[in-house]
Length: 422
Image 1 (cartoon, helix red, strand yellow):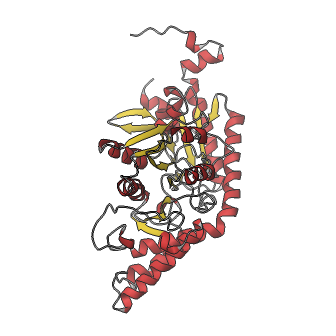
Image 2 (cartoon, rainbow, N blue to C red):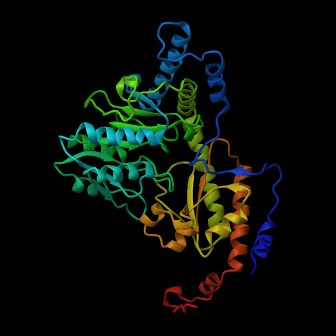
Image 3 (cartoon, rainbow, N blue to C red):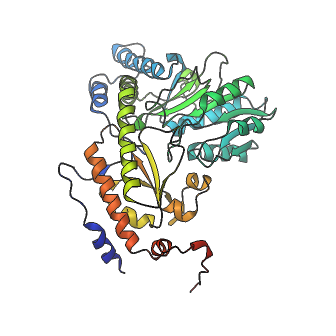
């Protein structure tokens, strides 16, 4: 069958009134700027344009006041103090500063770091960089539900271990790790604990004191704030964490991160954190209900579908599902007016299955058939209905074209089939 014929088959979809296309459901990748955040930022783009480090005139003072307020807003959200908030360009820089900064500062104490295989590339690639410089890194496997086993972290600790870096919540499958347990273990062993908190901060309660977190990275654009700005929490007491700076210059941010501060971005990040703190409880309830509604629709209408990741310890707006016996690329083609993420990563012009899904033990075929839905603040029930109905319709049509699905429905065990190469 030609590609044109296949697209034609996919294009007839149930109609939904009042839904504006295209629909965005990729809120783990980035979020829309909340209008209230933009409103807070605008004065700092036009009238209050001073350099926050200029302390000899009013323009600088007003800019610094905006930055100070943002520090307070961010600190309040994660139960830190304003002086523990260091501004960065985003979580990639924050992860680099935390991991490399600790590695260099505590090199005389040890050279061993522990992380997990499902971390974001900003952590994994930073660790690989350190390995080239003589550091030892343990990449722990995860369980079939995507969670890391605290016992395996304990077993991996050696006298040389100086840092454990485990993400709060996974960006692909939405699972929430047992952070408080890991933090307690690290503090008991006097090892620093870094957390990539990008997907968790602003979406679920994060308390750096209760969780014994020493360093936590976050990013504005994941919580309806601006792109290009983030923050790194660096603990000041019990223990006091020291970092070797990765960007040298004018000694900004207590000497940890030089560079003129992005005042409008920082103000926006602060406002986004304030809104998240005030609305988190209601937003969590709404997004959890929407997610569960969508999941139930898929499971009622389709066979051979399953959720990836532990659903008990899970982000409210995340749903990662495999639609088996459907080719992922064709599925995305059939829902091309919906922004979602697939279980494939495009590298070097080849489609590789997601390393996170592979770490759960999924086969390439199942990983390739996976879709990540990222529900967010601005998604509606009407949009969920449109997306789920369209996806169900597309899956059914694609399965009509699938000889594998036909064989399975006839009771043939595909593993017992001897395939002939042509």
